[in-house]
Image 1: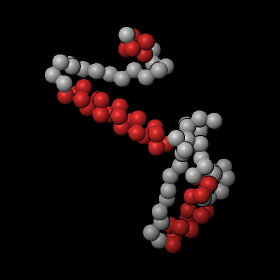
Image 2 (image 1 turned 180 degrees about the horizontal axis):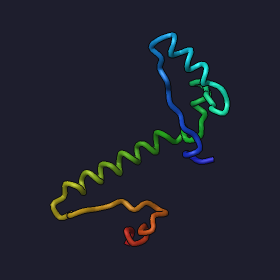
Image 3 (image 1 turned 90 degrees about the vertical axis):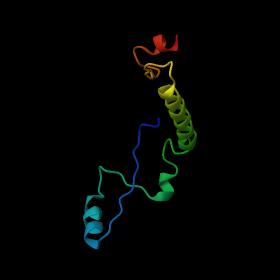
Length: 88
């Protein structure tokens, strides 16, 4: 199982009618889980570390975008057809 296997979120109801409609759709095949179960969902344990790394990458991109000697740049992640070229 990897980090892309699940999607989590929250729905907030402001009326009883909305809550009743939501209760109606909370039936399989859609899986809903409690907050305590959500903490054990795949990827949650590493989420903070991954977000810190995303933030570092974004900071590097902001520096590059403002640098006078950089005309343009593009990120080539592993798996991208030009990843090896970008690393060179």
